[in-house]
Amino acid sequence: MYTGYIAPGKLRRVQACFKNERFVIKRVAKKQLSFPPYLLYTMDNLTKKQRIKNMQANKLAGTKPERLLVKTLFARGHRYRKNNKTVFGKPDLTLKKIKLAIFVDGEFWHGKDWSERKHDHKTNKEFWHAKIERNMKRDQEVNTALTKQGWTILRF
Figure (cartoon, rainbow, N blue to C red):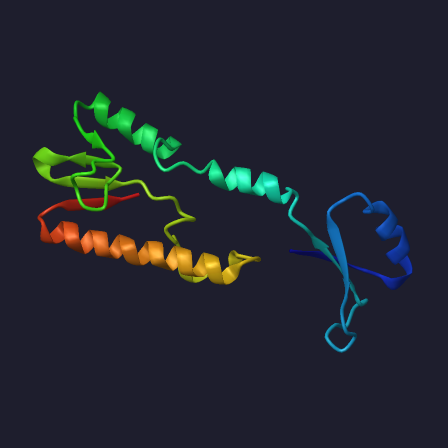
């Protein structure tokens, strides 16, 4: 992530300031820039182990939006099943009496505003693009299969 540029005369002072921080200073060809040729890039502020731990903590069920929806439905007297395996696609909530399947999808994992946010990934782009596009394709497959069976689908 680009955060700013450094004048050549101040390079040593900046390197001393950020000696213990996770920054990278890169030299850029003078042909590419009209301003001084050193750029300051911010690195990920977490170690690889911390990032893995954070990504593993992303839950499959019981997220805050899902809990809020569950409480609201229950307070209004609706009865539902959570993560019902008997319904194709295993929706987060199902109301079998009225054939309603509710999916509470995360914006990141299911590609909300994908055309705009596709280029937000800085590392391992091929993996993330393939994964999220596959999730979007699977969502479409589940939607078509459930609508053929007569289900109404809500995705949040």
